[in-house]
Length: 114
Length: 113
Image (cartoon, rainbow over all chains, first blue to last red; front, side, top):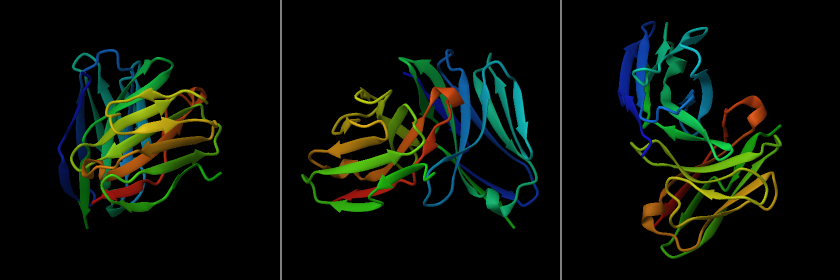
């Protein structure tokens, strides 16, 4: 079945360094790739997304890249800050039966060390 | 707007008991979803709805039922709770006009003993 693999499961970086989280998807029909940030005790919140007709998207310190041929996409956070510490989830989505179901990765716990 | 709200926030059940989790959204979204989140397994889709009066099975539907009698509400029911249903449950909603973004509620932590 459809699958999204996410690595690493945990990541520790020094404040100011960059962090990269990678995901691989299995369904070649997937056409939308969101990234969610989940803080402790809260629901996931969208931080950036990319569609299959775009190779890269950037929003201030956050960027996402997509390689459709290799079926993988990555989240890049530059100049990390302590408030970036959270669990990050990638997801892949394919329009099906009039809705857009997500397949989530297993999450990456990012710790930014001050 | 309150966005997506979930009731209750916490609940402890004994094996075999039943309960209903309520999700409400005030954004007039067509689509609503129920996920469960377990350590190391990410978020898995239980059931979803593409509109009032419709429901469909997701990835892990066994042991759960849902209803969408009103557009703004999506109920998740456990008829006979099992310890394997101990989890954090998240509701989400989305609409096609915005694209695909799903808005999540704050979650319900359920423990079945």
